[in-house]
Amino acid sequence: MSGHSHWSSIKHKKAAADAKRGKIFSKLSRLITVAAKNGGPDPDMNIKLRYAIDEARAANMPVDNIERAIKKATGDDGADNFEELTYEGYGPGGVAFLILTLTDNRNRTVPELRKIFEKHGGNLGQSGSVEWMFNTVGFFSVPKDKFDEDTITEAALESGADDIDSTDEFWEIYCNPGQFQDVKSSLEEAGITFDTAEVTKLPKNEVTVEPSVAKKIMNLHNDLDDHDDVQKVFMNMALTEHGP
Image 1: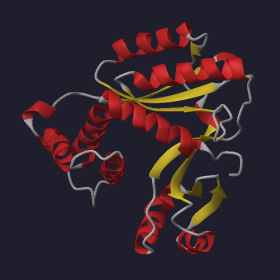
Image 2 (image 1 turned 180 degrees about the horizontal axis):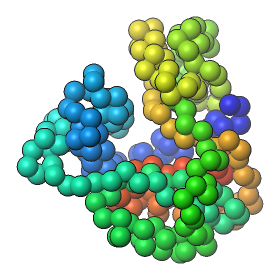
Image 3 (image 1 turned 45 degrees about the vertical axis):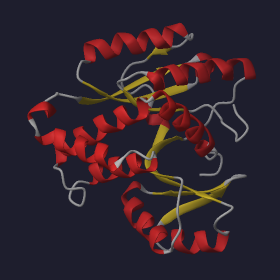
Image 4 (image 1 turned 180 degrees about the vertical axis):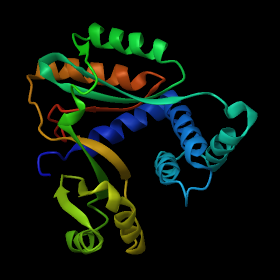
């Protein structure tokens, strides 16, 4: 897993920007509502809802907002027919993009995403053209200034984590998606708090590009991420803690 780290720094920067624009709460509300509608309102019985609630809490979403989003799934106003759709494409320099969306109108979403790609010199690809380049993994980031390596290693590896990496600021823990809840519970029982806890996508191999191309890629990433229907954007450009 070494070489696939350093994603936490860009995630934190982007999350802060999203919160200021007021978009992240609306996206998380939609995610919670769809998860509750499809799998039921009890997070103990609905793992996707549990993940969505955990993500909302990590973003400091108010409890009232979370409860309202769950209730919307069972109410008359929760009948919106949202679909979970994945889109794939390429940016400048051959950088691959994987985009997860929740949309109630794919006929709106597709041309809008295509336009964003074209604006930045990329193109929307065919289904299956990119997704094979990514692995689904459980991911945790723990601040290094709060916990030492031995504490992290013991709690993580004994509960089924596959790897622990290190950046300047974080311990980064990786696990099989099926072990995510076990690792999370083990960390919590050990009193370890984390900045990030999610099932995410990481590239199998990363692409390194020139700084001028990296800037274009980040502009494309940000515009895709800003789209109302987009929940997650993954790419295989090599990132460092100091920027692309």
